[in-house]
Amino acid sequence: MQNTSLSLLALILDHSVGNIIRMLRVIRLPKAERGPVSWGFVGTLAVTLAYGLIMLFSASYSSGYTKYGDIYHFIKPQAIVAVVGFAAMLFMSRINYRALRYLNETFYFVTLVLLIVALFMPSDSNGCYRWVYFPGGMSLQPSEMAKFAIILGTADALDKHKNQIKNPIYGIILPALPLIPVLILLRLEPHNSAMLLMCAIFATMLLCAGGGGVWLFAAGGVAAAGGLAFYNYLQSSGGYAAERLGGVWGLTPTDTTNMLWQTRQSVYAICTGGLFGVGIGNSVQKHQWLPYAENDFIFSVVCEELGFVGALALILLFAAIIVQGILIALNAPDFFGALLGIGITSQVAWQVFCHIGVATALLPNTGISLPFFSSGGTSLLLLLGEMGVLLSISRAGNARMEARQKQHQAEIDRKLGRAPRRPVYRRQST
Image 1 (cartoon, rainbow, N blue to C red):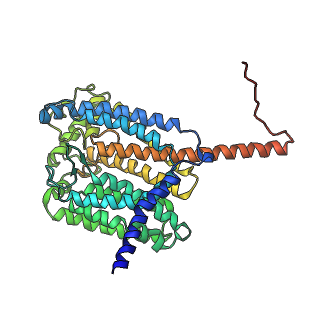
Image 2 (image 1 turned 60 degrees about the vertical axis):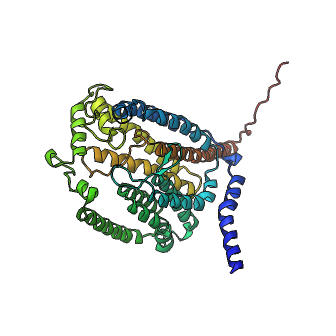
Image 3 (image 1 turned 60 degrees about the horizontal axis):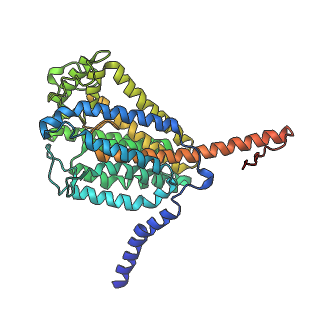
């Protein structure tokens, strides 16, 4: 019995402390992969982040003053996190993204523990247990960590069995196993929107990897049937979820009288904006008419204050981030980097789609934040960290592309009989 306990302790230490030590050994990008940073991507992120901070302050000062007596209540911590997170993003761009594989198990375990701890914390205004509170007023939303834990775990599992990825056991079932405990804990909170988002991210990664081969379509049918059954369960179970699903939503939500209060006020805000909006800071709906204007419905405030032009600019910025993220993933030097890039990019894409869908009554009110815009320090810090991982992948990909170009140029010079190009050294004057 004692030997068994010692063996178990040694295994735990090896998979925690041991993996951290292994990660530190390979944390720097190899010299051959220290390519240039994709400054176009960094610039797009900087503009999006600045746009988001401006609109967050505009959307939140009324709620901050009404609830906390401070118009800067939401923007102050968000601005601090934005600065710290942007610096962390640039730092993450210098590390070897492959080193994160050694953190996979530890990060997943810590996430599960925090999701369990959240169930014993005080509930929020909707009776949900989604936050872990720390002394000093700090708080953390474990579901935000769970998104990256699923992305990292899925990429690692699919890459480890890439030679057997067409097999449904290695291409679908094994990668899905870590997702199940997370979904169960999220359901207990309950946090249905996070469940929806994680399933969408996982399905996107599986589809792009070709996991399970032809069995992927059968798995998709089973998942669709399960999703429909879960939808019917939520609709018939009562509570706030059934109320939200029972409101008017869809492709032609014209019956505003039967919409939920939040959705109706959101549609009013969007319609008020017109082409150029009522002017930044001049929204009426954010003054306690539109609940959670600083978070779940910040897109509606953008539409009201900046109109169609402001909304289009927002969508184009996110489209640029998503397109560049896909290109980075496609240019990754290995399968793991490609999957990691696809997972991170799909998280942004799905969150933007769901947030705008809810604000425009295309989707039922699921309460999904808008990346880089909505209030939430945990979400913003982790998102910027994930953008740093994308930049690390892009540096490795850019270095490989440069090496190929040099090799191609050398091959052309050899065929044309040119002398190889040598660096010119000039003596410095003293």
